Length: 582
Image 1 (spheres, rainbow, N blue to C red):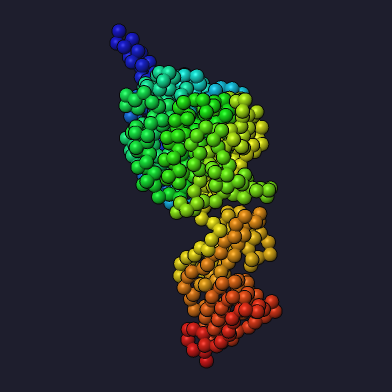
Image 2 (cartoon, one colour):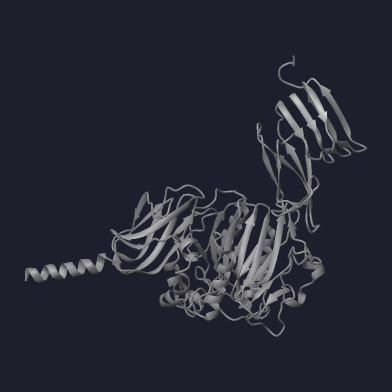
């Protein structure tokens, strides 16, 4: 009898402790500057841990789960901002997963202007061949580039958002690819995600909220919402707001984006008022404008969002709105003030810009331009609901406010933001770029470039984040190197397609140079005073409307190539700086 007891006990311990495999994930949630959540499911109950380190296979820290479970959520903390960490999942000494693709980066420091890249996928959880094609073509396009976030636009598991449907139609499609192993997911729910609870969105006890971690306390930046259904977060200099457009709130008969008096909209207004980031991007499932598989003229919820919510977003200078629901791709120009049906749309009244925004050199394709201070406003609206279903459209497709549209092939979006520039590309299931647009902020102006005292060499970057035409250079360059940077010098730069011109003024404190060579053009508007304890060599053109003083202790040499243009004020003198020459 005792022998039988130990056999049974051993069998139970084996069943509950030693998982054979991970059946869901791993997937990442709640990425911050100092931590992340690793979530996954094992085939049997197990007590697991996650080890992390800065090199593959070399793990310096270990974090443990809580007891025996099949669904695991492990909090990783105490990390450094924007640092790469490899991770491996263990059950005791048994490695469950931990290959070279299992890594993540923590989030950038708040306000950082580093480039961030995100995947935008709407209505993806279908288990169709198109879903796989869309995923594969997107990953093929981005190559090995790290993706900072994965925005899910709702209807993430058809048709009812059941746990088994998430398993087969979402995790089953994505979990073996690097996108799920490396990139934190920032989801919103769609109506199909709610159907497992109720048809009208009144029951929020649904698998979606068990699968994805609540971000209710402002832990990723933004104002705490106090609700699992909606949240905001920051990555670098971008503020994101993820909203619930289907769930009903607090005994209301209206969906929560349809009524501006409901808690979600009250919170949204407070969150946007507190936001200080350069870029503001909102996303939710139901689009305010569409003529794809849904019609925003005839569907009451869509019309209510358009008339009630959109004026609030415009008041707070929202830059980009992303939606799914309609199985198509549709995109507006930079617009504002259109709250009615499609027949009421007027290009002359509602467009801030007539450009396509494609920035490709074709007619009227310059990027959209906005000002951070709100003096130039406007919003782009994009429907990207074709990551899983074949697109379709209404009889009157496209919507007149959304002229850049595609209803024959599916796709997903690549969103990139760096400094003052935002780019979006819709990458099709065939690998083609269906559409693209660019927005710039705070260009076409004079800006000061403050350089720390004592800087010997400085990389001056084009505000356009691409090869640009500099007055001082013979070819288009993304940046120029100043050796050394000199206070008062002016640089004029223009994008290669003739859309923007910027003037960059160097502000620093000139040191007492020893030997210095002035070989770059002294451009219009410059006011420079260079002092040297030894020698100044000049080989540059000095343009009109400039003032330049070369003051050296030993001597000044003006070599071939040096020329002053009529209207330039130039003087060379001895005296310089430092010790008096012998």
